[in-house]
Image: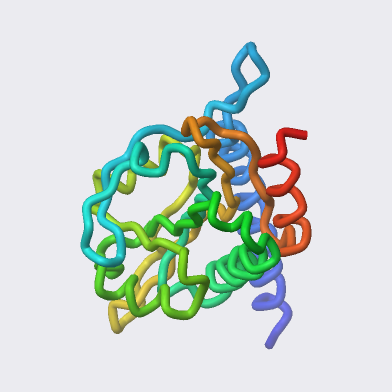
Length: 202
């Protein structure tokens, strides 16, 4: 590689990093959970979707339960299966208290994630874990309600693509209100301990 090509590569790298920082700054300002004057995060809302058995469900179906809500997709190569495994292990750690919790993954890739595809995928995780899908408008609406960022990457020559997305796990109370969220890689022990604390009211 000659000197001019090296300089061109360095310049391109600097520009890419700068653009990334700008986009990240804009995203943090625009898409971070809004905080109301009461100090409660404005996260969550009503939804009507299909679960992985093909049954129509809505958020009100899960009242009296705590919801663990994650947004992901079945073709995700790393983050999604990792977080779903954390949820699975946390549910196992909860023992009988797991009956009070409904964990779910709402797909951000409804184009590929049909109910049947989700059904196959859910078999890899906790038996109580629900996979939810819908049309793109429904997914965008629930994503906006939960302040979730997601975007489709440019497809390759074979039409395959990835989804860029945030990867928090949200805790919603029995009344459907936001209570807490777990950052990526929080770990099953941390998640289970926090859920016990939340459910005990302490």
